[in-house]
Image (cartoon, rainbow, N blue to C red; front, side, top):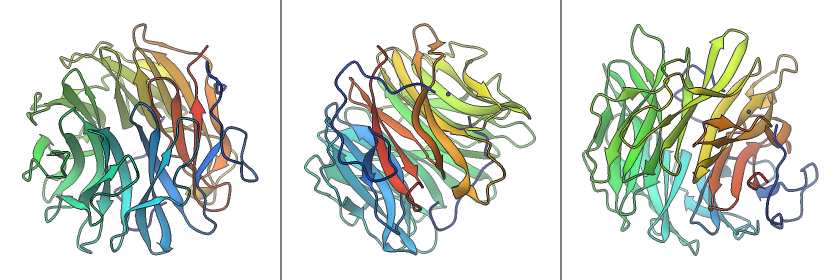
Length: 412
């Protein structure tokens, strides 16, 4: 887990299918001892933490970004690596995206205009958490080695996420407003690295805390989704649409988790003609679920009571989802109960997955086992090039955090 101060909200998060493919499996590098066939080591360095990878695709290859303490055990920096469609790591030592003073953590990345925008939570000011970014070319060159200041000199800004609309990037984050709580705000960043909205777009500012935003672009607009904690009321998952021009289309937002009890940590993706939003829930003390709903481009919720992807007494955490047409792959962590762990890095979790058909609102009943019985937080993320999917996660099997990946083909 990254060093420094964290904003930790109530943690309730909530599918084993066999990794399959309709195409020949991409060739993987030689496997380190203790790793399974098909697992691709993206960054494994002895005695350093190479953790919390995120991923994007340009429709051909992939780029993975993660945080590393290889330079200093007191600080994290941001590194990236390109991965070919055959599973070859093109940057085995990683590309240093940001090695600014102090910590750079909680990264995200989006593809756009022949380049990538990497964003992260930054403590270089030594005063507050801020949001910085940097553009990365497809040849691996970092265009902004000092970083782009996206949210600086304001309240604490954390957990940035980024999307692309065909013209600009949109970065959203949670920002502290003393006396009111945490709001969701955003700013567009142009392909030349300019911040289009120096005064951020206010997306959600209801009483209480709004936190952990995610976003997806579809049908000429974004859907931004977040955790909502209204004072005196149960938590919920809320959302709002934002246009490419930065206009907030739903000033009051709308509730997505209508039938959930204690939802947390949402994920969102755009399918062929609608969004899918997922979250973890705990409807009963002994039951955890991974639930979701479909939302059309007008902001109408298709499923008044939502649907369940997986339910069991086991804890389900940190879902991630990507779609290709009507078919979506969702991945998440499923905790295995094996006695009381000594700490978070001793918790045994599998990385699981499942297919969702958005047209039928059906879930393939067979789970995919992506990474089995490993310790630590996995924080699995998924991207797709339109053919297969690539899943990345962090793993403690080596004794320190490593970033690992695996291809998942569409169901046969």
